[in-house]
Image (cartoon, rainbow, N blue to C red; front, side):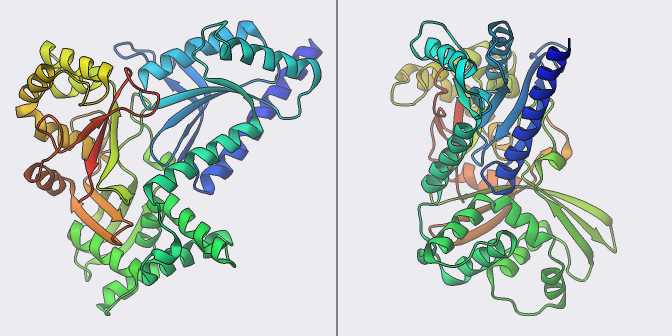
Length: 425
C-alpha cells in the first residue's frame, strides 16, 4: 500500500508541474486556454463528464490538444485513455491531437517501456487514437513550434515593416509587460508576441483608465491604442460623457466553455458602466491576419446540419459528403450544385453562427455581438456589429456554395470536420 500511495502522489506532483508549465506558456501567449480535468458529454446523452482528459490546451488558431499524463507505462491504463481520446476527438472536431506525456527525468527500464509502446504505434503494430507518447520537454517544444508556425503564417512581417506608430504601440505595450527589449531581434520577437496576444491587447486598451480619460476629454489622439479604443467605443454606441468606467477581459476562464466543451466565439468581454443605463456588457470576436480570409469555424458535418436544419436529411448527407472530400476541387460538381441549393435560404443563419455563434449553443456572454479585425499587412483595424459584418459579407459574397466562406478542412481533420474561412473586412 505505501508504494501505491507513493506512486499516486508522484503522479499528482507531475500533473501539478504540467499545469504550472502550461500556464506559463499561456501567459507567454503560446496558448489561449489551459483546462485542468477537461470533461465532455456524448451528444444526445445526459452525462456531462463521461469523457475525460487531464488537460486540454487551446492555441491561438483555436486548435485544441488533449494531454494525458503518467509516470509509469501501464497498458491497462492506456486502454482507458485510448477510449477517452477517441471519443473526445469525435465530440470536439477542433481537438486535433491526443498526447501521452511522461516526465523528462525518467530513465532506464521505465523510459524503455514508454519508447517500446510508442514504437508499437509508430510501426502500426497497434492501432491508436493517442497520437504520440513523448517526454514533457518535447511537448513544450511542439507547442512553441506549432504556434511559431501559425504566427509566421498569419502575420508574416517583421517589426521594421510595420507602420511606426502601430509597431511602437504594440511593442512598447509588450515590452512593459514582458521585459523584452534590446536588439532588433528582440523587437521582432516583441512584435511576434504582441501578435500572439491580440485579444489581450484589445482587452488591455479597453481597461486602460488613462486612455478612457483622454477619450472622455475629447482630446485629439493619434497613437494606435487610443484610435483603436475610440473606434470600438464608437461602434458600440456609447456617449463619452455618459461613461463612468470600463473593464474588459480576454481570459478564457472568465468567458467559459460551451455546454459541449467547445470554444465560444467571444474573445473579449467589456463591461461599460454608464450614468444613464447602468452596466452594459459587450462581447467581441477578435481576428488579426495578413490574409484576406481567416479560419473562423470548425465543426463536424452533423453539427452544421443540426444548427442549420436538423430534419433536412438531404442537407446532412451533402455536408457529410463534403466532409469526406474536404475541398471544393474534389467535391463532385452535381453534389456542389445540390449543396448550394440547400444552403440558399440558410446563408444568413450560417453567417451569424460562424461570425458570432448565434443560433448555436452558448449563453449570452459567449455569443459575439461585435467583430474586431486587424489586417497586419495594411495596418487596418476595423470594428463592426456582428449583424453589419454579416450583411457586408453577404453583399460581397464570393465564397463557395453561395456563401461568403471558403470551405476546407483543418490539418489532420479531413473526413472528421469542416472548416470555414471568413473574409477579413
